[in-house]
Length: 473
Image 1 (cartoon, helix red, strand yellow):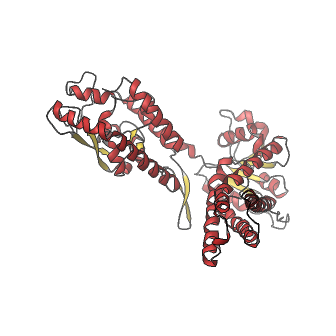
Image 2 (tube, rainbow, N blue to C red):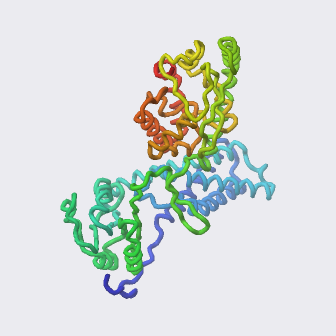
Image 3 (cartoon, rainbow, N blue to C red):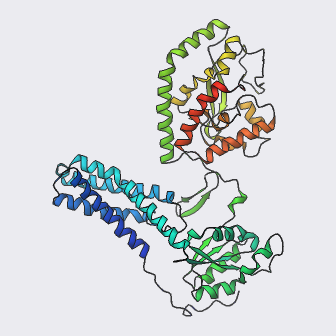
């Protein structure tokens, strides 16, 4: 690149944070109006204490909201990105207000109905306002107003997907200026498709940014181009353009990737469990509540099955088999014994149709998954979940982890009594590697897309599949 231009070539303009100011004013207004409206609704006299609560609530929320991410720009952001920042900021606000009321001994001045309604309703009110604002902003952007001018630093091959996204989504509020690269134009693949968008080399990009023609720069150079990236960022420091690096993480098999910090050092988690923080607690509560309910409802049937197993054939009532749990730790999974043998060694033969090892009662229990009822005890012990990838015998894990890439990633979560694979027809024998590969793909789909509603959907569909499925034997 050419000699770095002087810092005085273009005055650096400090832009007024209009978006942040808008958020501050609108959030503060919503918080105060909501409290006054609830006081009116509950016929409570509006006095000095309510004025102070409204003002403090508005001020404290504004203080917490920005570091929580609730005041970030909504340009290009889905509405869902604001949910947890708003909830976290308002939760901290409520905790602070309660602490102030406790220290000042003024809690008796407030109506519990009014305050509880205010505390519980504000996140929904603020998020509804955010959603309305995003809809308005997208209409403005789609009309071609208030657009940000975008330049891409990288080759056509590196930038093609980014160009496609910007062009096909005018509601993002981004207008493509063109792409810049200091290498010769690559004529492979679809390079000619984007010839019209090539604007020159990196010197031309810096010049465009310094003269105000570029607001955002997306760098799409490969990770190996560290020196070129550092040099370009250093030259762009002479401009007011915002800079974003777009690494091609699609080359990795991402699993709940996210930025985390090791002290002051940012690191990217490529593969991680989805059940950390609030989601982890939600999953734990779900498992605890459903396991207790299931055990209460199935206590009598389990007692009858236990007696029937004992009378049907010699051997233990409950069969314990070692399987991998979360993070690959070995657990003992409980099942009612359905076979005349109790295999749990280095070689285990899967049950097949008409398998002579299966007892007469065992065939019925396996057909309707009644043999797995004791696994609710595994859930209470924290070893399993109600919903998750079905655990395989240790011997099968060791076999298939060598044949199926990413097989062990299914153990980033607790194994489940039922799962996404099972309700999609992948229950029972896996006599080919392809069947096991399909099961693993469904397990990974579940891990990547987990939600409470997905769990409830799987549980509901399991009750239907158990009756109609003929693949369990």
